[in-house]
Image (cartoon, rainbow over all chains, first blue to last red; front, side):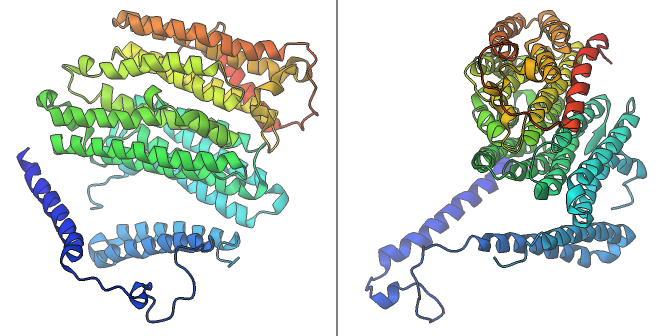
Amino acid sequence: MAPYAPVGIYLVVALAAALLFTGLPGLLGRRKPNPQKSDPYECGVEPTSALGGRFPVRFYLIAMLFVVFDVEAASFYPWAVQMHALRLFGLFEMVIFVIVLAIGYAYVWKKGGFQWR
Amino acid sequence: MSANVTNADWAAVLSIAVLGATGLAVLVADLLARTFVRRYIAIAIAMIGIIAAGAIVFAQYGTHYSAFGGAFVVDYASVLFQGIVLLGALGSVILYGAIGEERRIAGALALMLWSACGAMLMSGAGNLMTIFLGLELLSLALYALCGIAERAGAHEAALKYLILSSTATGFLLYGMGLLFGATGSVALSALSNPALATNPIFWTGVGLFFVGIAFKLSLVPFHTWAPDVYEGAPLPVTAFMSVATKAGVLAVLVRVFLWSLPSQHVSDMLLPMWIVAGISMIVGNVGMLAQRDLKRMLAYSGIAQIGYILAALAGGSAEGFNAALYYFAAYSFMNLGAFAVAAMLSGDREEGSVIANYSGLGYRRPWAALAMTVFLLAMAGLPPTAGFLGKVFILRSSVETGYVWLAALLIVGTAISLYAYGRIVRAMYDRSTHPVPAAKPFVPLAALSAAICAIAVIALTFYPFSR
């Protein structure tokens, strides 16, 4: 069990820290609420509608596409750093990766995934 | 980096690469093809790719190779399980000739091919990472496949499958974490260290791993998702899930539990697994009795049949393994065949999965009814079908290895199932007053698939393959 001790200590410390930082303000802080303070923060702009209302489902599509291409960028980065060590093999891997993504991109485009409906 | 990966390593996974590339080709073809031929071009490309991958897989028959430092293994089992995965993919892809919306065919086919890639990866997995990679590839594609049809039940099925399956994957991953903690290695070969047999962390990991596997195989305490998901998913996807998914997971089960665990104490520690198999046989067969939907009934049937296959594996003998493989091959043909007949009777509303629509079928569509009868008899385990011979092999191996109680449960389960299967056969040849539904268009691909499966189910009886 000895190798797991650091993991256990880490868990305990993480839990304690989280509880401490969320619990302390409630115990120590003073509360003087007013309507301005209770407003959701929107960069100083007056809130126009209630939070927690509905928002269009198309945002999910945008979010999913963002994740796909974000992951692409994230996988480019380590390759770019190690490009010389990986040599031709790495280049081929990356080209295949980009082709796969490009086909997916073309498919989504042709099927109207980028249209704002 | 690239230095210690040889060409032979790449050759070992060539079939998977071919299948993955076929998925891309299907998408590209769909973008270029004209609307009215789209469906058949997509299906043709997918079938060519699957057959090509199958040829590559069977070229590996008889070889033994450990690729990528043991991460992927080519051996007798990997070839046969991959063959069954490809068979399942082929039998399911064909069904899209009869079912599904035109504009979603290519996407569905590509997802199915990639899902099959995951199952093939699992078939030859030599370490825990490969198992997880294959499983995720398989599952992620399946979640989308389940929800791809425009039916109320499909989305429900997809969501249920996503949530429950992810939970099971969590169990599996936790088990893998503990196994890694106990052995310090992700390689399956590290699990066979005899010193582990007394390590509680190790056995906890094995147990959690089994919970994940049992869920994916829909064994009994973890089976409740299967009927709902099978019912809600589109017919080809259900066919795929019942064969290809189970092949991949079963391969992992064999590799991890039967071939990798330390050999002493294994029969004691694995007892829960065989008990689960025994309960599955009874619950699956009893559950079949009340079903009105063919896909739902086949889900329960699948629960029971996986129980039979585990019963064959229980002894851990080579003969039992062969019996399990034989029965699984027969099971694949009869399931794919039954789904093909259902597809023959279906439009997009999948009328073929409603059991009531089968009454009087023997007089409306005699050949379809004959094929369905063959498949149902095979599932019930009656001669002259491969289902009968498979059950004889399983019974022999369980009795010889001392699992007589499993053999007894198998016989009880079979007796219960006779009523459920017989009910449909009787309805098909019943000249009663049921209204005759309108004639359906002829669906050549599904009919061909049904015919081939029917012939295979009978022909396998004369070719009881073994090592």
